Image (tube, rainbow, N blue to C red; front, side, top):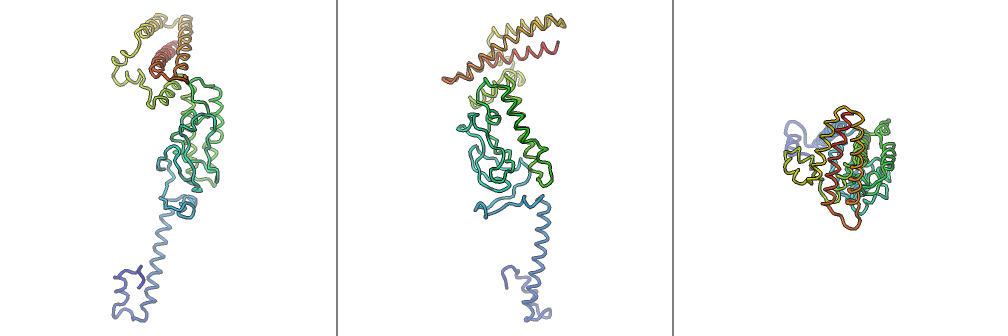
Length: 309
């Protein structure tokens, strides 16, 4: 008997009184045909449940030469890829390299968001290690052209907007991927256009750790510890300015005057942050941290004044 027929089925097919030995072969053929039809129906049902279209089916050895596991349409289920690691396009399975990496992170060369072979939008995880600077194609510096950052963001949103992937014939995952990448572009723009957020982000890139801000320490209950790291002269200055704000109350002219004075302090603080973070000879992390602390306090004062105006 064929290997696909179980021993029980073989015995049943040859049981005396049920079927003659001469018709056993024909009976087994019928049994195998029924089993094949049943398995085909089950497979068809599973495919209809898991896959939204034929393009969702993975191509196994024909294109890549190795076994592939099922990849769902959810971006979060895609395996994490290291920067520079090889991965396959989810649509045509052409081997590519993930974006990012120190050697590429100079902001000079634009990254590709689409497969070069089939033009399908890449999986969001391909940009997991890409910095905000590289994503928006700007140099990794504190002193950046904010207008260039905005222009880059707008250009990317034109080609990545989810509405461009909503037409008939396009798969659900393409819109999902565009939504995730568009959100990442917005996040990058939000941080790079704001001087304080940009300073903290760049500090994290240069030191390999997130900026441990005074605000975060105060939130975590370490206010006394945070105050010990702030220069006393800065604390006295902040206290005086806040007292002046309280005295001004709703006096518009006085508040505008205080706002202009604070803006001058912020400009000086930003200059010091730029000198510390953009120093190409030697990066002084402590100098940069102190400058960012000053900018943080002056930004808080700016918001307090604006709330009263």
